Amino acid sequence: MVDPKAELASDVEVGPFCYVAGGVVLGAGCELDSHVTILAGTSCGARNVFAQGAIIGGDPQDRKWKGELTFLEIGDDNVFREYVTIHRANNEGGKTVVGDRNYLMAYCHLGHNVCVQNDVTMANSVGVSGHCTIEDGVMVGGMVGVHQYVRIGRLAMIGGLSKLVRDVPPFMLVGGVDEQKIHDINAVGLRRIGITQSHRMGLHKACKLLFKSQLGLTKAVEIVRREVPKSAELDELLAFVERTAKGKNGRGDQR
Image (cartoon, rainbow, N blue to C red; front, side):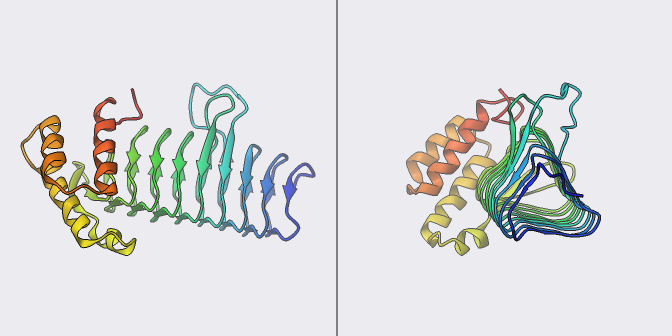
């Protein structure tokens, strides 16, 4: 069932038992498998794939939401596997945003006001609470739970079954069922995007000083700036941890 007020490019494929609400925009080459629901307020770019049972653009799960007009914006070349759910924002005119080339496996959930940037991979049954941000190139293992307002930095890798209640710095390997721990840098991911060995070693040294020493954050940052060779990635890491420190409960977006 496709509402006449929905806007579908001429080559969009809609499978059996799908529902596309009025006001939905689907760009060129989008594919809907069976039993897909896409609700009002959702706009999608090109070549997005929605597998069986996905529910896209649902109402926010928030007691404060009283029916205000809100949105979900999706970019290009994303894959949403079976029974993925994504909710619109909870504030008047607000947006939940998914960028380009992301791959969300079965039963993943994105809550209201979430921002997923580009090239993110989520294994099965990842739950992302409201107002979270997941930056470029992040990989999230299966059955991870992400607390609201958490930011996961670029190219971080999250172990399966982890509970994330604090921001995850970029370029790090993080995991923990009971306690969120930073283990080391994501050396494989950094190598894949062309980060040199010397810069990877700099990030490794910074990781030890910032997250594994008994130094306070201010002192650790001071030592890193003085002793670790400069790189764009190191600057990004330091800016991230300092931003997190200005927030509440280890979450820089919650102030």
